[in-house]
Image (tube, rainbow, N blue to C red; front, side):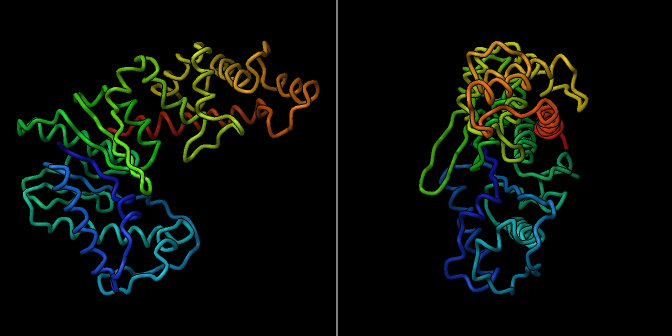
Length: 333
């Protein structure tokens, strides 16, 4: 089995314990990484870095081996501090991962490049990489794993993704048929709970149309980077999709070939979807008309009515940006 690991999530789960310096912490991290690799009987494991976008206004640190460990580890890793802190830590970890002496092949992200503990590994297909999120870099690694193992004639029928982000599950379902593998497993590890999700079964159980359109649908109904419709869960949105088949082709088009200048007919179909999301018995087509009916005639709280037409149009464009231009390009450098 091969695996692609979200290293940022692993850092979150690996507490410093009794570490005094970052050198001590790195040794603890490498020990845990080796344990994961050997326990899963892996041929290759990939460490993915976290977000590189600069945000927050915390105190900037110089992270070196001799730097004392922060007393508040959660605060060090939080978005309130500069991402440069985490970037320095991830790069330091990548350097040590490239020095691991093991039969298992390790590849790690370092800035826009990649390093490996084996000289025989060719990472040129991965560099330079401009992916800002680990969510999409994971799949670039998966593609490289599959191509490398096919050249080496090593069996890659089973591949595992280790992460704790629901967005990655959805991207995996959408891209599964493009990876040309038999089994893709997702190890979802949050707190004390661990679940193994069979992505290959989800992708084959869902219709091909649903898989092709799920990226836009998921972004449109709310994700890590997109707002959701207040009081409307994913399950509710999925149930509405089942009865509102008109948006299926719209979701496919906006997931695969969408442009930020969304066609008017697509907007109208998505308006109808949002109307049904808030009122399954409504026969109106416009969200503005639906807002008036729900608020004035049915006494619905203003927080529980659809957004305006103009606000919805901007929301659609943001969803297209996320689905078409970020998630759908996960297999590209």
